[in-house]
Each structure stands twice: as structure tokens, then as C-alpha cells.
Image (cartoon, rainbow, N blue to C red; front, top):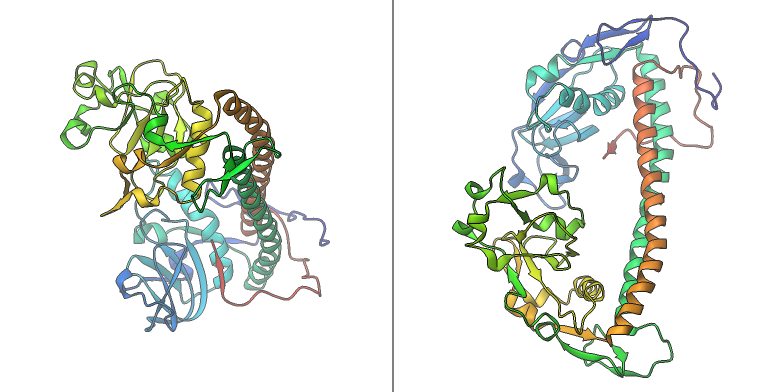
Length: 449
């Protein structure tokens, strides 16, 4: 094998495991219980210490700190439950602390820790998920982990495979990082384009005046500075929140309902699939109709970390209302272009101008009364339309670049996944691979998200 070409082995045999398929003739396939020991920690999240002396592995990708250690040696760790179950893996050599619902593979026999890390990280969640009737796996049980099959070439070959994967995945990860940086820069550029257009206008020679607001600065002299309550529709219930408490409970959602419930997920993502929306009956809608939302209304996330994010409601096939975690805003169509208003709301969110109108209790929540008083710009209606048209063109170009970078990132992740899987199941032969002399080896401690 040359460094530029990946070959296959000369002879293969059945592994006896469907998802593994054939393996090189000399390889074994054993349960992890045959080659490692398995244990869990006894620490809890509250035991974390900022800047602790030892790493503390919990049920998230973030590594906390601890001033005590439960283990000293080489181990592969994975979350036993929670959102990252079967997905979060760490390989560590040295002293560390770990959570009571984090599993530790250690005391490796006939398998190296690094090779074990790659094999389990690549296959465990995918295989367990495929065998689970639910769409998510809530937790891993000890028998699942102890009986999980692992492919075993010789220890020397495992070391080569792990070194090969360290080198190749580092290159892929570096490319992914560059794409992520590009996406962040493009996102900042996109927001800057929106902000400049909706606060400065399209005419660079327009006379300007001080808005009297620090974050806003100067605005075109002929633009009106007003409050949101004067820019929204004068009709009743133009700006409302959704029904709370007993007015909208799970028992009110019915499969044959004819009224859609729009939740904050639409406000934050802009994505809406009618087939996945909750529904209520016309009869119950009559009791909560003040929260009705129609085509062209702006839906604003009211509660949680993404409060203030918004999207414009498209045309639906039936009536709709907003849920208790959202706000519905209807603009005055005679003086405001809804797309301009939506863009200005995005600027208010990006500039943290809404933060003064947030009530913080268990979680942040926007104040409806406070938002009505928030500053709002109102250019002439024809100028709003021109701004919206130019924004659509400029944002479209930036969105295309962002989509291309996201696609490349996903392609690179798929390439990394395929490469790891192929190497640790013997679909490619890396025995002749040599690390380029100018490239240093990775440290013995390695964390992979």
C-alpha cells in the first residue's frame, strides 16, 4: 500500500455479525467483555469544580474539572444516558473523575485503548439505535456494552490503524473547522447586511440625523422613529401571546382537529410542516381565538434561550393560533412592509435591544407590554419595499455560500465516518501506511466530539 492509495485485504471471511459483514481472514470478532472491563463512576454533576486538578467526564461533550480522581490509567468513556447517549466518547490516559452514569472501558486485553475508542465511537450508537424501536435511545445498559462485538486484528495492526485514523481524521477535522469558521463569518456578514439596510437605507448620500439611541446611531433624516405599538395593526389582538395553563393543555390536542397550533420552533427555525403540527378542535379554538395567527403575521419566540427570534407565517390550509411559548404580531399594512418589519426585529434581537424587556424567572421570557414600547424605524413604504428587494438578493447570495459550506461540512463528516468504519472493520488495509515524517504524532490524550 502507498500513502495515496487504500487497498483491501487478500482474503475475507464472514464475521457472523450482519452489520459488520466480512472481515479479513485473520481477524477475530469478540464481545467487549472478552477484551475489556466495564465500570461506572460514582460522582455527580454537582461535584464539578471550576479549574479542578483532574478532568471530570460527565454526560456531555464538555469536560468538567474535579479535585479528586476515581481512576488512574487508560480508559474509553461514554455517556450512559441523556441526549448524547452512545454518541459522546473520550479516550484518556491518566487520572480522572467520572459521572455515575458514565461507562468506563478499561483494563484492555488484546485490544488497544485507542483502537477500542475508534471502533465504539463509530458503531455503538448507530447499531444500538438501529435495534431500538424508538427514534432515540434513552440509556445504555451494561449487557449492551459488555456483549457488543468488536473486530480484532493483531495489536500491532490496531496501533497502525489508530495512528492512521489519528492522522487522517485530524486533516478532515481541520477542513471541517475551516468550513465552520467560514459559516460563522458569512453569518456575521449576512447580519451586517440586514442591519445596515434596515437602519441606514440604500442611499449612501441621504442626509442623516442622530437617533438618540446608542446602538442605532444615525438614521436617514426622513425616516420616522416610533414605537412598535404604533407600527403594528390598529386592529384588536394585533400583538398577543398564546393561551397558557388550562386554556391549552395536552388534552386539547386532537388528531382530527382543524386548527393548527404554531409553536416557538417555527419562530426560531422558519421551518413548518403542517403534517407535524399539533391541532385543536374548532370548538376549543372558539375559547382561545384571541391568539389566532394568520398568513403574514410575525411569530416571535417568547420563552427560552432563543427568545426574540422570529419568522413570518406562510399561508396555511386551515386556521391557526400561537402556543403559550410564542407571540403573534400583526403589522399595520398601510404603513409597514411585513418583511421589513421582520428584518428590523432580527436587528433588535442581534443588538440585544430586546433584553430590557425580558423577565427572568425559571427561564427568560419576553414582556409583551415592554416590547410594545420598543423603538421601531418606519421608512416610507416604497423605501421599505426597495430595502426588502435588495436584501432578498444579497441574502440569497450569502445563503447560497452558507449552504455550500454546510454541505461540504456534512460531506466531510460522512467521509470521516466512512473512513473510520472501513479501517476498524478491515474494509481497507492500512498495514503499509507510514506517517509522513514531518507530521508529529498526536498526544496520548485525545478528545473527539
